[in-house]
Length: 138
Image (tube, one colour):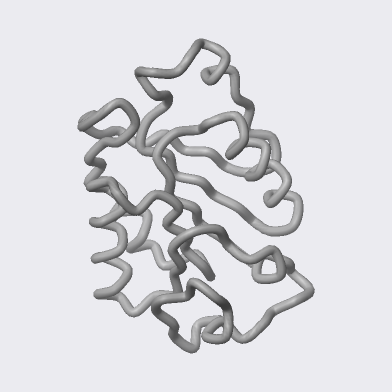
């Protein structure tokens, strides 16, 4: 299953989560920024091991959010089975949600259920908690 996560920064605990999730699915994570201006240097020592991590180019709006219009480019490709918006209070996430809604794509806000990311278990998407928009794509 091809999963796209959209989030703000690569924090250590999120990168650990994505590295684990990347073992069970084809995972791409789009980050609005490379780091937060209020975090220590330790937060900048991340490694994308089992997933494709992409830092978007945009204009910083706060310590950990940005406006990244290029997000639309990734959503137009239509190559993901599920899109997860993990940060909802950023301009980029709002643009992504609007773009996905216009395309009637499968997306969820929050964490993707582990079973949904498994290549062997494919539950009915509309029955999963947190799914806000569904199609027959999955």
